[in-house]
Image 1 (cartoon, rainbow, N blue to C red):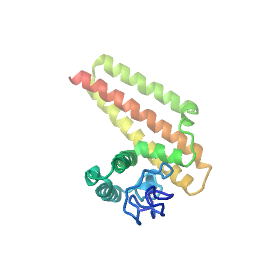
Image 2: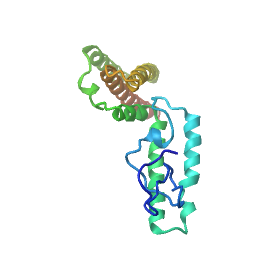
Image 3: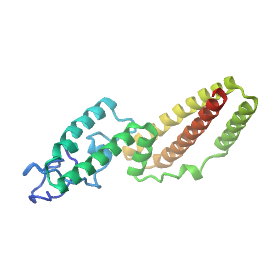
Image 4: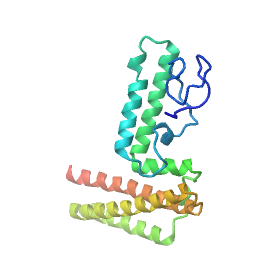
Length: 208
């Protein structure tokens, strides 16, 4: 399963990369050096295959679930809970497109807030225009304008997600020049996502 490295805490043997030691069958503690993609046996990608990820998640859950260790030692029960917490964190992170891209960039050595400090003038002007549109629609209580704005933000999110994904694929392939591009698109994507949530909150207030 390639989920951990090192020696078994119980028998001292090589656990074989599994959650359970192949020699003695004891559950192993989580290894923080193992990244989420390796944990779920997925290739480095901003768009992991969800069916494969779901199947892998269920398979691991059956192996490490605390219900299997109710009669085990307190230490093994603790390891089971820790493994489940880490597995859930990996599954939730890689299952969310924005979080997955952010995690992958970090894993590849990117600086997460790089793009936040390097937005170009055109992007900043566009942001100001979007915010003015939101404020005007809210003042006029115009739900149709808000709906149009939400669709526009959806479109921009998809564009940034695509561009970020392409840059991350290039970076994972060894093109270090794509690092800045990936960070910039990721931070624009993150901004649009937050703005979209703000638009939806305004819509809810007007329709509520």
